[in-house]
Amino acid sequence: MSALLDQFGYHYPFASAANDTGIQLAACDRMDDSDGERSITAAKGLFLQSKLVYPRQTARMLRAVSRVVRTHYYDARPPQLDPIATASRNMLRFEGFSGCCGAYVRLDLDRAALNAEEIRFGTTNVDFNAEMIGHLDRIGRESDVSLDISPESIALEHGGKRVVEKKVSLPTRWMKGLCEVQVYQSRLQLAHRFSPGLIMPLLQQVGRSQKHPSYLTVTAGKPRLSPRATSGAIPVGGMQRLDTLRSILPLLREVHLYTDPDSGVHAWLGESEAIRYWLVLSPELHRGFSGEGQTLSTLATGDWEDRVTMLEDWLAGRSENSLNPSGPAETIDPAEIASTLGWSVADAQATLAALATCGLAGFDAATGYYFQRKLPIDLSRIEKDQPRLKHAARLVAEKAVRVTSDPVCDSVTAEVNSGDLTYFVRLKSTGDTCTCPWFSRHQGDRGPCKHVLAVRILTHREETPQ
Image (cartoon, rainbow, N blue to C red; front, side):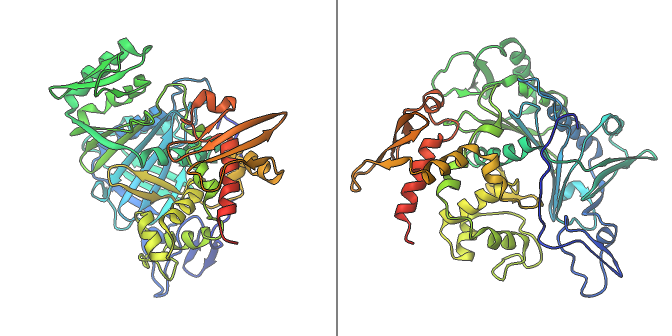
């Protein structure tokens, strides 16, 4: 990879081991070989060995994923080239971010798009280099295409040629982006459905207005862009990032628009036969998902430390209380977790947020459920990847926070000494405020400042029975 990456010191729930029947890799879920027999897929160390049912559509959409990952729409950072592939029993997903981390792309392949005897749970990420991209470009409607995925590689074979891409390190910025984007996706609501033929004129209009703020209006079912925020208009900043849809529009049956009016995050979903292409865009071209801070409040006040191992076991199907004794959970519902494990929903959400910081949890806005990736857990990275949380904890430890409000008030006021200055914080149900420059600049849109977090940590400790 062209960019310098942090190397993750991860641990897995069990060690890799060899026996008479083969090698069990820790990066895959544990295989049940109690009867002495294993599937061909497992014996080869794969979690997917499949023929593509829709080879042309899949190849074109994988190329679209690769195009997003190779593009930096705003800054000039070197792009990562590493789609993340996650297989579960009924789904295969490819995910990635643009070079600036302001566009998240995901390709979902349903079981019906894969001719495979078995799909096992696992995740890997590889570089899609020029050879793989050229191989994808040569796939046609009638091509016979084989796709094999293991913890260490992805292999694509057709026309007598096999191309293999090896696993690479997962970029730190992507780990942070995966944590943040799932929060935004959980807030998305379906706003409109369009036929693909209506999207091409919209893309042509984008090219003429990309330097101006954009709002999408729909008149008589037809979408149009406007530079003005009229009644009912949807803010759609940085619409030039939508150009990736241009190459796959002929393959799509319908295009859906999902929006979150509060944040300005919006998502475009292109549907084909058993295949879905997601493009989730940050509110503005210059904003990357990796720095949004949407999980900070939950991490600061959630009592998740003692629950992580239990939730990890439940998700992997190893828990005595698991509803999925046959293997890893296909979907994740915080309410179901709370009911099954005897937690509050808030505790389930906080613990899930902690695992999400390690990239474990994603969200599917179409189904309304979380899904999991097979990534190892390193909770020591939470403070490193969330510096505001680290600094807030330090302020509390240094006794730099003083609550000044009356306990019976419906809001909390506090003074926070930070450096040579004192900032005034107010916590309210309608929104927290702080007098620091960070809050003045972002008004809470990019998560809480360290001073607000410090007050929340302190008040939570005082309210929690010891």
